Image 1 (cartoon, rainbow over the protein chains, first blue to last red):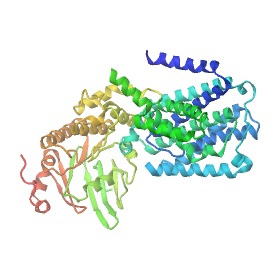
Image 2: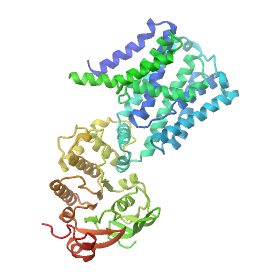
Image 3: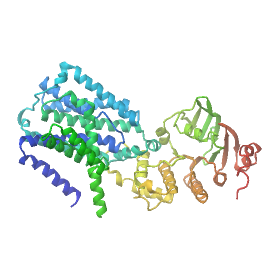
Image 4: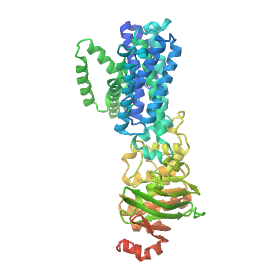
Length: 304
Length: 255
């Protein structure tokens, strides 16, 4: 079967999915969509740009909080809150990126980490705006979107459009340039391309999409917490991307789906779920160092 | 600036690393069409000279001019855009990409299309890619992963990457480093014939005298960061000072 028909089937299946699901599982399906988007946005940095950010949760959190504050305190509709969340996360990413892409490797990771912890502190301390430790709760979309199935379709459309955009970009001249500078930034400079501006643009794009994911999730989960901005939250997309395979476009999506499902299934059975999950992820990564999709591709290529 | 005819002119270039004077007041002019060899024993300052004139780091003092414009301290991407291409002593290619993609990236830089997100990158500029591959003798390697090419072929690919930018001035840092003796001469003759064919001016550093005398039209000898001698190959070879620096190394007879 060729790629376009596979894609069409996948999209139809995604549209039909909630028809057979309870509200609980519809929310889980939304969570998968959100984290698939979040993990792919992160992978623009890691897999394509070779930049290991340890602060990607900053943008997910800024997107979530922006929507939460505007909806809760401002009483604004999603049609205003979502674009505002995109703008806020883009601006935040531009500022953090401006300082961070000047450094490479572990220094880049540490700078992104530090900026994110700064925002975490703001979320904790600016109690009037963010609710401090308690976060902002009781968020709800108005009208039809308050029904889980409609919100799922709403989220699905946004996620498909954003994924299509990122897919387009990684296969464009810009995307090829990005993959070239991952391995050899100096050579890229010497063919007449300003490496830093391209890295910054990628950082802003990745941050904006992460903010979008956070915005979707704020409404579906009904609340935002400072923990969204904590450093452990920045490890989530790293694990998802590596688990699914960060050398492929869809790998992080697969990683996100596996991660979310594992969490739901295991946490339903034991309070020690993080321990079990940790063990499973360690085993999976050891068995498949290139991730699930890297493994799949290898098997497929081997059979040809 | 001194020399109005020069394509490339370096004026009083000095570079200090801490207390070490790596370059001391180097002045040189390179005319269009020259194949200029910059030679000198290890530690003479060849690499520092190269890295300073290609914007990797700024000089402590002095200036660099290209086509009459002052380009001192400009970043590498700016130099590439005005027509200066370079290769590295340690071959610098995109090892994870295919040979074809290596050149497509270079052409993207040349055409200032690295920001465009529309056309599919994989099919871009194919005629030009084939032309460049033929030019350096790499036809039929287009779909291979660049890192799997032989060392010599990687050097050729790097040359093609530099040529993709349609430079007027090509700077080659040890273009035959790591090659077998036979391969060295073949490789430098390729550079020489390409330079004539494409009307390029070339500056290269080299420690193999046979390679230098095979193509250089003018030679500059660096010693302890300063210019020790300069002139046409026969004249430089005859200079006692040069012979002394090389302690009778292979400066003398060449076929």
